Amino acid sequence: MKVYTVSQINNYIKKILENDIFLTDLYIEAEISNFKAHGSGHLYFTLKDNGAAINTVMFRSNAEKLKFMPESGMKVVARGYISLYEKTGQYQLYVTGMEPAGIGALYMAYEQLRARLEKAGVFDPKYKKPIPKMPKTVAVITSPTGAAVRDIINVTGRRNSNVEIVIVPVLVQGENAAPDIVKAIEMVNRWGKADTIIVGRGGGSIEDLWAFNEEIVARAIFNSQIPVISAVGHETDFTIADFISDMRAPTPSAAAEIAVPEGNAINDRVINLYGRILKNAESRIGENLNRYRYCVNSYGFKNFSNTVFDNQIYVSELYGKIYDKLNNDISKKRLLLKNCLDNIENKSPLNILRRGYSLVYDEKGKILDSADGIKTNDEINIRLNKGNIKARVTEAGE
Image 1 (cartoon, rainbow, N blue to C red):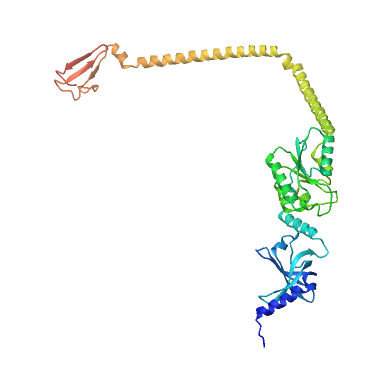
Image 2: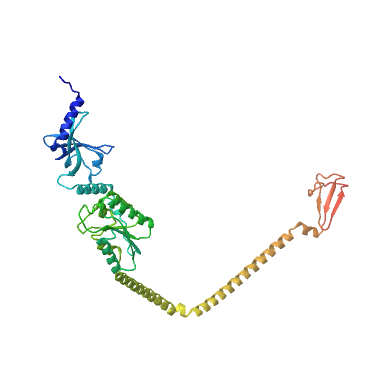
């Protein structure tokens, strides 16, 4: 009896599965459940229908090629092969490619990105920058050989030859188109001389227009400091760039019409503004002229010199009255002052001395008005009208 290990049995079964022609390349339509995106980039999930389920893995090399992000509950058509995971002894489906069931992968990716950006709020009108009405320079980011660039050049040249059109050539289709468009938008912003940017291309399938549905392009348009007009495909084509740009044009020709004002329209506007300014100026001049005539013909203006003369006479008379009143008041005050001075003079002790009287002081300078306290030999001072006398008392009494 030969005895086998578990590893040998699992390896044997794995070879059987991998050598089965039916199981090496098959398509399975089922619903995703238990979806998990591992940090390594591998995807792990279960595919199930009403009666059964199968464990599934999609390695990073294949997962990176997906245009959409799988989710639990999503119905898909998965392509791959059946093999055995030897460590657990479980067979599983190894997916090499996958499409949403009943809908294209690109359309699914488009809807997922649109929903995610809308939830982030970047489509909000508050972020839309106004398109300049009188640009000097318009940068056109598109293919240099496509019909779109010819249409833009023709329309802008016809509308206003004074506006400078700068063509920034980029790829508009293929894997390298999206990074190329992003670099062009960033370069025009660094250049800083364009007033408006037109980003677009001619019509095509969803695959052809896919570069304008890439998130990196959407972010570049959103971060642009210069207003961006999207002009991708035909009127019925909508891309993520259309939603996030500052204005969508249904065609490249329409974008040129939005970005570049028509020369005749500018002339008409200038003429209209000139007429309004002239009319306003004439109205102001007429109003001021009427005010001038009113002033010139007024009584005060016509009789200005008489009015000044009358006022001069009135001022002179008023001055005379004030002058006379002041002189009269001064004379009265002067007489009153003289009377006060005379009264003071009459009552002055010095004036009394002139009439022969004298003042007597003791040794301490106190005026003596009686003999009380005066003794023989005390010194006294006598002040006369002219001069002082020192004396000694020889006799004192009442």
